[in-house]
Amino acid sequence: MAEWDVVVVGAGNAALCAALSARESGASVLVLERAHEDEGGGNTRFTAGAIRTVYNGVDDLRALMPDITDEEVAITDFGTYTADQFFDDMFRVTQYRCNPDLAETLITSSYDTLMWMKGKGVRFQPIWGRQAFKVDGKFKFWGGLTVEAWGGGPGLVEALWAAAKKNGIEIRYSTRALSLEYDDVRVTGVKVKGPNGVETISAKAVVLASGGFEANPEWRTRYMGPGWELAKVRGTRFNTGDGIRMALDIGACPYGNWSGGHAVGWDFNAPEFGDLAVGDNFQKHSYPFSIMVNADGKRFVDEGADFRNYTYAKYGRVILNQPGQMAWQIFDQQTVHLQRDEYRIRQVTKVTGETLEELAGKLEGVNKDAFLAEVKAYNDAVQTDVEFNPNVKDGRGTKGLSVPKSNWAVRIEQGPFEAYQVTCGITFTFGGLRIDDRGQVVDVDLNPIPGLYAAGELVGGLFYFNYPGGTGLMSGAVFGKLAGAGAGEEATSGRANAAE
Image (cartoon, rainbow, N blue to C red):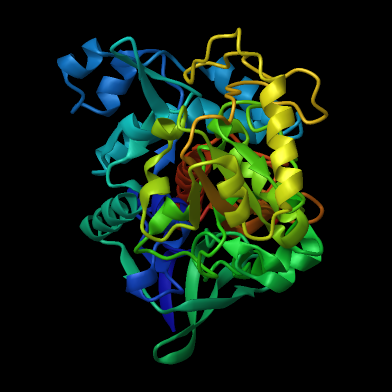
C-alpha cells in the first residue's frame, strides 16, 4: 500500500496551492487528477485568469507585477481596491449571507497569497483588455478587478504544475478518487481508480480540492431545481461532486448555497462542456452596453444594474428561466466598439441587420412585432441628456419602464445592428463542505474531522446568489494555501486532534 504524508484530490488552482503549501512543511505530497493530463487542471484551465485582490495603490501592483513600466503607469489610473471595498462588495452581492469569517480570511489574505504565489513562479499582469477603458487618453480600471494570471487560466495551471514539479510534488493523472479511508476517528487515506485499477493510498492528511458538482446534471437538478439539467457547463466535465460526496459519506457538514451557482450568459450553440481550444470565449459579457430580449421580444433584466463584475455570475440563471432558455443581446453601432474580444471569435451565434426590421426577422425564436415594439419603448425611455461613460456607473438610464436600465442606456438606432444569442453557462456551484479557520472539514456536529481538509469550489458558505468577478481564483488560492498548511502541519507533527 502506497503511503504519503498529504494527498490532494484535484489539480487546479486550489489543489496546487494546497500541495505547495503542504510541501513547505516538509510533507511528502501526492496530487490526484481525475482527468488525463491533456484535460487536467480543473476549472482553472478554462478561466480567463482574473483574480480579485486588495491593493492600496500602484506600488502594491508593481510589487506583484514588476513588468509594469513607468510609461504604463503614466497613462493609467489603477486606482485602489481596499479591504473595506472588498468587504462591501462581498457582502452586497451575496445579500449579506456570506460567512464573515471566511470572507475576512479571503480578503485579508488576498494580496499576501498572490505574493506567495509569485514567489513560487506564478506571474501576473494587469487586465488591460477587459477591465480598463481609455478615456481622454488615459486608461482607467473599474469594478475593483485589476489583476490576472499571465496566460490566463491555462498559464496559471502551467505555472502551478511547474512549481509542483520543482518542489518534488507528484501529480498522478487519470486517477479518480472513489472514497475516503476512514476509521471512524480520522481520515487515513483515499481509495482510487487509476490506470492500474483500484488501490488504496494511505495518507496522514487528505485535502479535497476537486471542485463543485456543476458537471453532474442529476445533482444540479436535485439541488438547484428543475431546468438546471439544460444548462451548458463552461468548464471541465470532471467536476461531478466526487469530493463533496466522499466527505458527506463520512459525516461531513454540508454548507452554503446549495441551490445557487455561478452562471453566466454563454453562447447558445456552445458545446455541452467547456472547450479548451476556445476557453472562456463562449461567454458574452458586454451586455451592459446592449439590451437583452427573450423569445417574447421583451427585456427581462436591468442590463446596467451594476458593473458586469457584479452581475454576470447571476444573470445566467435569469436567462435559463426565459422561454427556450435563451436570450438575444442587441447592440447599436454606438457601443459595438466596447465589445470584449469574445464577440469576435469564429464560433459565435450572431446575426446582423441594416435596419431593426431586418434584424428582427433574423432573431430566431423571437416574436418580431413584440421585439420592435419593445425597442421603440426602450428608445423613448432613454435619458439622452445624461452623458454616457463606460468607466463609471453613469446614471444614464431609462424612465418609466417596468424593467429599467439603470446605467449605460444607449438608444438602439444606429445600424448596422448586431445580435448575439446566449443561453446559461454554469461555472461552479456554491454549495459544499463546511471548514474551520484552518481549512479543516468539520462534521455535522461542527467538530473538525482529523486528517481532512478542503479548498476551492467545494467549500460552501462564501458565495450566495452571486459573486464579485475574480473572487473564485482568489478564494481557491487563499483557502488552498490555508488547507495545505493545516494538512502539512498535521501530517508532519503528528499532533493529536482534540477529537481523538
